[in-house]
Image 1: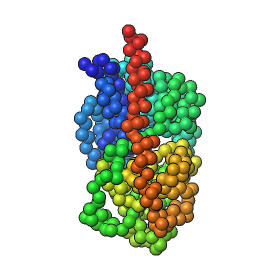
Image 2: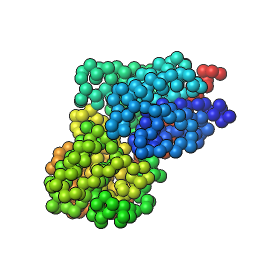
Image 3: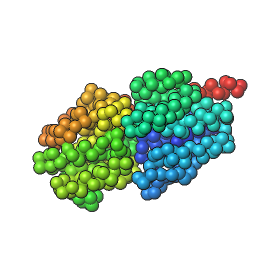
Amino acid sequence: MVGERRGFVRIVSRIYLPEAAAASFRLAGVAKALREKGVEVEVVTTTPPPGLQASDQDRVRRFPVLRDKEGYIRGYLQYLSFDIPAFFRVLFSPRATVTLVEPPPTTGFFMRIANKLLGVPYVYYLPDLWGAASASFAPKIVVRAVKALEAFAVRGAAAVIAVNEEIAETARAMGAKSVHLIPNGIDTDTFTNEVKPLSHLEREDIGLADAPYFIYTGTASEWQGASIFISALAQVIDKIPHHLVFLGKGSDWDLLKEQAAKPELKGRVHVLETLPPGETARWIAGADAGLVSIKAGAGYDHAYPTKVLSTLACGTPVIYTGPGPAREDIEAHSLGICVDYSVLGVAKAMERLAAEGFPESSIKKLRTWVLENKSLSASSEEVVQVLLQNLHNQARMHN
């Protein structure tokens, strides 16, 4: 078999397609690239939340898990409802050659032990610093525990994949054996400007009609502080014709709905549930700008939200508020408007874009920039090379 010839990679993650999240796209891209090289791949993950239907055509093993009221696997009871069963499923399943592990640190903890018992090396994906993020809201004892679990997972890995230099430096300080800097990418086949435009009926159905709009997609939680966009629109509600559309879910979703219902917003904020990625792309492509926010000091100043990339891949500029490496790219390459995290700053950005639009010459290069710098296929190929190196190392050890 081809899989026997090239090895067997097991991917372990609490989240996977069809859930629209950075990890889902990232891991699906890696799985696809591995299979194209003749590597056998198995994904151990969870059953999707209500309302989403998995259409797995490959070897994906799904199991039930506890979720919060928003449908997320978030919180340590929820994490452990995946991690502990996954530990035994990996331990008593056919032995992989290499395992690719996605956080949280609890998953890394159990996968280090399981793979040690099996004599299988694992590669640990590090898209965020969970210990640093928990410091903004959790008690000190919890923060210490999370940092210890994260360091345990990082130190035991044959290789760590970090999505930016800050995370890479932290992984090295934790004692990582080998660190590879591989930024996130986006699926440019799904997120494209070559999509079917929204119909009048689709727009009318949410009360949008022919009005222009800004769009926020994906997760809205405490560290994003997405409600800033509603507060900003309230400041300029009588100066611009734009509506706001929110597509996604998260711990702040009820707050967004509550704020959207305020009379002073005149029914111009529409908070909708998550749509499949292809449908989301249609809404992004029709917007005047995509909205992205990061609250400074909430533990995610280093994060690079993939909603920046999905927006640009659809040929839509970004209004970005807050810190982070994505802001540096947007400013350096004229991909949108960046402001500090303040209601007044965002309101001025909305008013400016509504009055001036975005230069046509710049619009044309938005998708091109993603294709050249941040495509999922390119980042997946880099991850695959790390996995193939570990497959090769294992093959040499057993020859």
